[in-house]
Image (cartoon, rainbow, N blue to C red; front, side, top):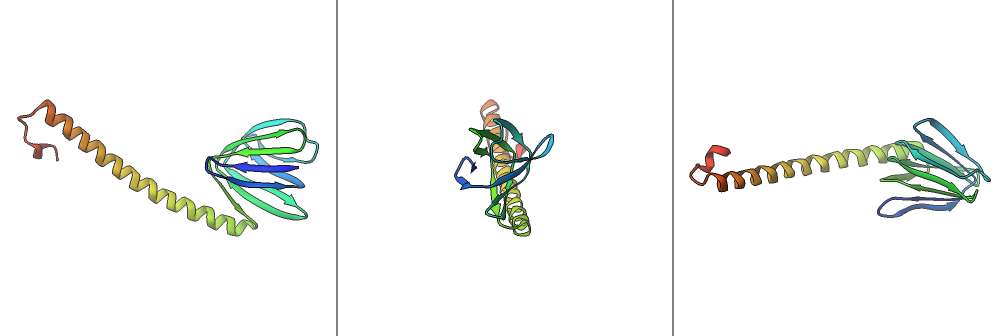
Length: 136
């Protein structure tokens, strides 16, 4: 079977596999060669697959998975982090989560500053006689 995992920015995985295990809202499931056509929305979870007896893993942040032609598995997701063992993958996912949370906080503060600046500009245009210090 051929597994392809893509994000908006890159192809994360594109390789031949023996089997796959994933999870959607109804629970976990497996895909073996010859699987019927299939479409599901993935939960935030770990997708695992086997290649020549070795397990590989990918943490996905939601996504859509299709099985077509009994041999093609495609996963489109917002974000995917791969790893050869769960401990390493866990640490990388946590590190990305923390850095994204920090970036989101900075973006939120900057957005609030821009909104306050826009409000001050609107008020100064609507009430030209008011002192600017009133709105700080």
